[in-house]
Length: 202
Image (cartoon, rainbow, N blue to C red):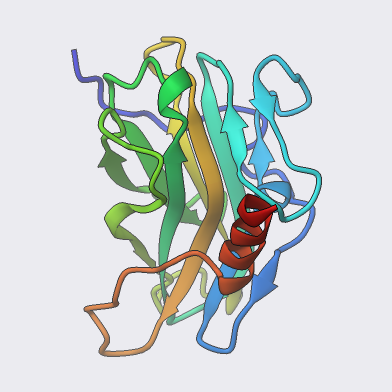
């Protein structure tokens, strides 16, 4: 049965992330795995977490997928949230149900949701959701404050099914210029690709 996602209630939602990995001049903010809140990441039987920016975080096995981040945003702006993902196909299991990318402005804001299917995800890094999760900080919202916090995440914690093999390379928050409704797909940062190529050559 395809359950309609309810709002996440885990300890990572609304909690502060350590820092934002990098913010580019084009309005793109990139979060590496170390910059994200990953539920159970301290437990080595559940997650394999890189110490720095080299390589992805790999889900070994959990029944509660909860990966979230946050950043300040400005009233009147629109933002798109996506994740760069791949799969360790040798250790992949439990992806029959969809995963949900969610975003909201402020802790009391309404979530925007995009369901994604990872059952056929391969070792190739791809952006999810392909059409991204878009949210607007409308000018008539939060009249007392021109700045707020964007909370976003990647979740599957409604079925309690065990799953594994997912690799999270980075999360991307892209500020959308006014009047631009057709953004091209994101790719991983050049730095990330270069480090992985160098590691492979060694």
